[in-house]
Image (cartoon, rainbow, N blue to C red):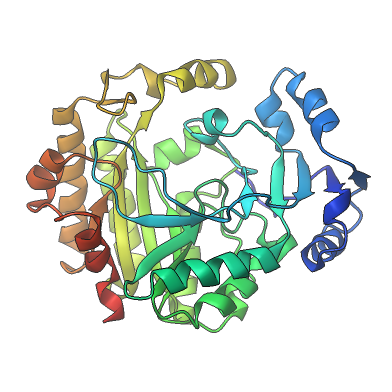
Length: 367
């Protein structure tokens, strides 16, 4: 388990990114870590991709770059399953943690930890996007293509992001993490439309499959401290993974969680079972030869991803929903990530009438 903040072995700065304020802030905060200005990262990438474990090797280095495309994109919900109308900000790419099941191993072609520093373009794109959606409440956040807080001691981006979104009353902004890097969050004044979220799992999965991540207990304690500060918090049990004594494992974590934090401060809890593109299986086998999670009873779903048989997913969901309702407030909003209408009906007892209905359900704490 990682016991200290992440620092890269070296920082690479693209020449056209050198003069941005965020670049200067990062170079100051990395301290004695060496840095090198490069014209473009291709040569560095070729060296890393030639190593035995390009994904693991890429996590040792930080690339400072410009986002040349869109910062704001819809969450890539899977075809054939209900989406939750979530939007993501692509500021940081990749993650210093190394979870065996991580989809980024398959999804990202650039293994370097990357920070996009042209924030003026971000604010401009966000202004346009939120103005177009001004008649709806939008859920938007970081943490899909990189951990929201893992690099915050270097970037200090959370202060800028919260400062921007606290004024945007048609947006609920979420920072999602597996870390306990909350030092900067605790310096910020809370706002009702800001949510700090943690990904959680059973103790066994966290210990065996979430390399370099803080323990579940440490994450829950960080959530308690952030909640005590006045922020709303959220939790993501995704991926839920079957393993020996999984029922007791998830029961233990949920009981610990709901004894530690005030249910009234929880904005939502999402649930999603283990699923992955078939091409990720060989990557996991090569990088994590001791893992057993990819050898369970899996079938190819409507989206082409491998996932548990529907009866197994329903068993997981019903048990976990039962634990949450037993120890938490009945009013905690629960939702599935990438699940079918049948599973919603059988496990939740209702089906959202489209993405906007689910959006309204998850936005209801704002009133």
